[in-house]
Image (cartoon, rainbow, N blue to C red; front, side, top):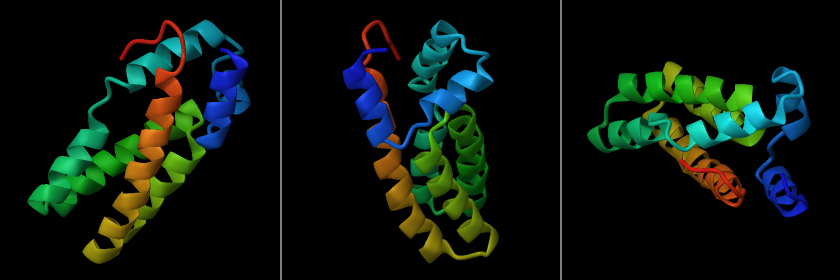
Length: 122
C-alpha cells in the first residue's frame, strides 16, 4: 500500500492498522478483501430499498454493510450504518434517510481510496 493510498484510507477514516491486526498482519489478504468489498452489493441493496421505501430491506442491508465495514476497519462507514440501523429500529424513516446520506458519502470515500490502490480490482 503506497503512502498516498494510506493517506486516502485515513482520510476515509479507515483503521488500516486495526484491520491488519484482525488479518494477523497479512496485508496481501487484507488487500484481497478490500477488492472483494468493491463487489459487495449491500450498499446497492440499501439504495434500492430506499427508492422502494422498504424499511426492512434497508435494515438488513445496512446491518450487513455495518458488519463488513467494521471488519475491514471502515470506522466512519460502520458508524454511519449503525446510525441508519438505529433509526430504522426506532421506526424513524426520516432519520434513516438522513443517515443514508452519510452512509453514501462514507461509502464513496472508502471506494475511492480502495480504487486508488494498484492491483485492486472490484
